Length: 546
Image 1 (cartoon, rainbow, N blue to C red):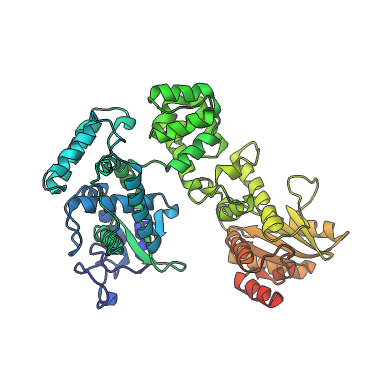
Image 2: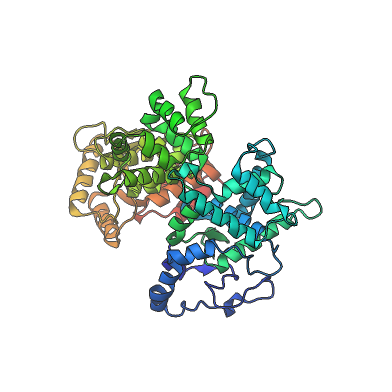
């Protein structure tokens, strides 16, 4: 969500003194948020022209990220180190999420789990005694057994000096490296207390409030979420740099397993030598890939070092990624962004139909960066545009066949010759035809398309009883609905316009509430004119299967 969009959102949090005009609050029970108004909310133009640029300024964001004094919220633990850990954990969890946002309860749990995992993973044997950062960590806690504000600044200064002296990002130190050393010497903050297990969660929440005060995160009410926390997308690049974050390890490994260059032993051996990767591989490329990820080699450095420009160009072309003039840095960034973003909501244990459902809207409007490579690789085509057209048809067929259990589904678009729709479904002697319309803009159902649809129906009607024709697109113009009604009156067949989002919602509704092994979606839910409505279909299904 961009900063300029936040002006129209329903705020749920009351601690954002830079988003909202008012004093810091430590409790909200006795406090009316309606009394607070953003300085610019009552003047949209002023907000967009004055406040948004000021909030989005990269230097402001860097200053807030590197200000290690404790949060301004009173009654929070006043350790700057604890505040830093919580800040880092919250931002790291959010940056990994689709749309860089997460429901608040899930976020608090995720940060607590992240801390627990770090504590469990590192111990006294994790680092060599000659490790300079380990010595610095020990020195930092020597004074009164804690890390104070001046020591945090000293460590940050050391990072800057050390990192400037190294050209390789792989050799740079990050806060995560420092946390790992502190965990190894048992000085990473504990996240639970036997007498007060909710203490850590409360502390994390107050850390979240402090980030809201600094405008680094927002918290709003959405239609489907009561408390949605996110990072304004205007800040993503700066926060990504501060975290030294490029990809999650899971998505990194998926990238290595997917891309052809990392199937070559010579490339993997070169990476092992270049980055001093340890770990036994037993002669298997899979083990070599896993060792690269475990070694913490940055994906950007790996791609730039061991993959030649020709292979990078082939990857960018294969997945339809945008890379300005195909310069190496732009191609590498595009590949990393693609595998990080497209994989965020992918569960390898899901059946293929669930992947199609999850990505259906993105396939429909051509948002390539959100379409997982597992789906793109199912289609062979001469260019990305053709690939997504075919993928849209494949996804629709798979949803009808597997999600709705419609055995009579038959895809036509890529197989048949002559004037045919993209697919057909037979149920109890009645036929439904469908056509996919992938595009970025709204579909208007012009005269040429209406003429083709009439030909599709006339041809099929010579043999079968056609009762429905579905047009599936990302969205439709108002004129499309009027044109559909006119066509329906002309040929006597229901013409239904279905948004990709609505077909996805219907599939999810069917799977959650009505699906059974011996049950098909009744095609009667598509009776009617103009735009398909999911709520109406849900009511019909409830009556049908009550």
